[in-house]
Image (cartoon, rainbow, N blue to C red; front, side):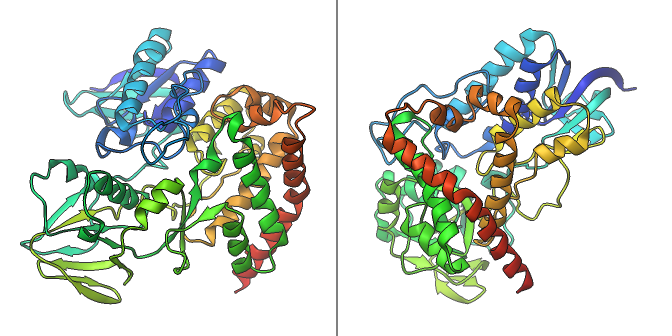
Amino acid sequence: MSKSLSSDYLIIGSGAMGMAFADTLLTETKANIIIVDRFAKPGGHWNVAYPFVTLHQPSTFYGVSSRELSQGLKDQVGLNKGLNDLASGQDVLRYYDDVMRHQFLPSGRVQYFPMCDYKGGGKFKNKLSGETFEVSYKKLVDCTYLKTHVPSTHTPNFEITEGVTFMPLNDLPKLTQAPDMFNVIGGGKTGIDALLWLLEMGVNPDKIQWVISRDAWLLDRQNTQPTAEFFSSTMGAQAAQFESIANAESVEDMFDRLEASGYFVRIDKNVRPEMFHGATISQAELIALRQIKNIVRLGHVTKIEPHLITLKKGSVPSTPGTVHIDCSASALKADLKPTLIFDSDVITPQMVRSYQPIFSASLIAHVEATFPDDNTKKNDVCGVVPLPNADMDYMKMTAANMMNQYKWSQNSEISNWLLNNRLDGFSKMVSEIGADETEKRAIMKRLRNNAMPAVMKLQNFIAQAGAG
């Protein structure tokens, strides 16, 4: 017989979005919360991430609103040198454990059920004890919709025959002897992480092969820094983005202008990117990756044999002594079935600002806590920003993001909340511009003057693409 529980909110998932949502709800309401998760510790996919993983954006943007993750440091060494620190996976897990043990649970308003599978209908089961529970709740918060896929639990969609050494990048540090070659499969950020780690460990670039089905547009990490000293880079990149879009004569011209302005970067100047996932990279990392010359661009892998790698557009030789590293999992699925964030008694946190799922979850919780219980109005304020996959998806993502930003700017309550929410970062930076800071004011003028023309141009490009 199931044990009966009751709560105002039942949150499924104690990953980054679930924790951010719960934190804001706990801070801004008197609600009781039950959190159910399949892992033994909070942190979601960080529990099974590869050991050398770090955040890809500054730590300041990550975690929960009420507790700082960043130590306020800039990296002094390594490929992120001179930029704000990037927390390691271990740092992130330790942080979420502290938040749960020292903030959430002592509040007396949070019950946490790790190692449990959610079965639907308010029911869940403890995977170790077999005990079952049934929750009576007012609202269900489904934080599994944007579930992150990681290499360690990924099943490749290609054939691997006997005699092939194949592993997720989680197992790279376990190697005890040098292979003939390292073959990294995957052109996204995970693949980049594997390559950079190998290079940092002293592997000769000529001993690395990189299989890329699609090259990607990337973001310069210097343009994502939320501290005042980087104002011209961060806000300047936003202004340059709007200018590039507003002045573009075609979609191709828009991407060319975005690259020329420094908003976008790419690894190989001779290959036109077809993918965009919003990944960030430093200039030092770009230089390091350009050392790798053995790059295979023959589409997706279909089969790996000891002496041959078969791809959709051809094949390349291999050796039994080659280690094949799987980095082909997509972190977030861009083909998810669209769904409303607020729908009846179910809340499905999604992206409402480009590149920032954690901030998005916090804002959605704030809207739930402070707005009248009218899902139509809540969904209007929290328009879904679609996840990008292909290069063309950048346009829909950016247009939706700009519409949300405009709506928030017209709402004094949300504007004030943004100013005081540490996960936002940029609002406070802009609010602190001094009367005599002419350079910063000029950047903001460029941004404002080009915002509306950029939105209109994006809408035209999106319509043309749809008609085509």
